[in-house]
Length: 272
Image (cartoon, rainbow, N blue to C red; front, side):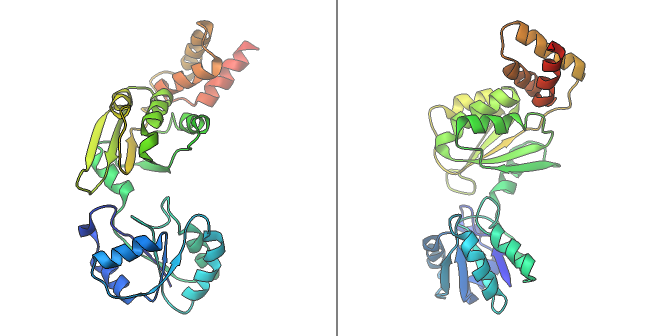
């Protein structure tokens, strides 16, 4: 079978007994970075020397069929560098191929940066959506965030430290600067830090620069108290004041929860 195993996201003390047993007995390990896996084995004092097969974003399509073939006759342990494989990490292609070939897939639960950040952020946890890494390019990122302006569920994002300030600024523009959020940094590590506040405040906090692994948790949009026709009228007012239609639709969307696309189209139709 294919065995997906969650590894610590920072603190080695979070390793599970099941993971230790699996590492001690594995004959084949598919790993996002084989060097990271070797360091994990050494840190845990495990003498087992399984065959290590690199599985990353650049080779997963080629490796998936090979690993599934092996898993038909022996267990293949699949690890990412931290947390649960397949969640913004390699593994999905292997699981999909295994499902198609009728090969069993199981998981050894463990640490998750997504759930850890959600738990400590202080924002609603009853419904949430994981959005992974926002696009690196500014224009693509803004379009992606704009499409989420009316999302009512709490949103969880991964981000690199060098882009946190820019991403928070784009979130403030798309969602409104008063939208609550949390920056969760270095979770479970010695310098763990959770900074909570409105997006405008978090932008100011991030501007000097930050380090470490980052998870962003953002409050979902509140149900709009403004009827859609009134929201369209507000867009028209902003356009009359000199704002571009697209920008006006985005701003009203961020404050009302109505779709920016629908506001744009309605205001455009009203002009013709």
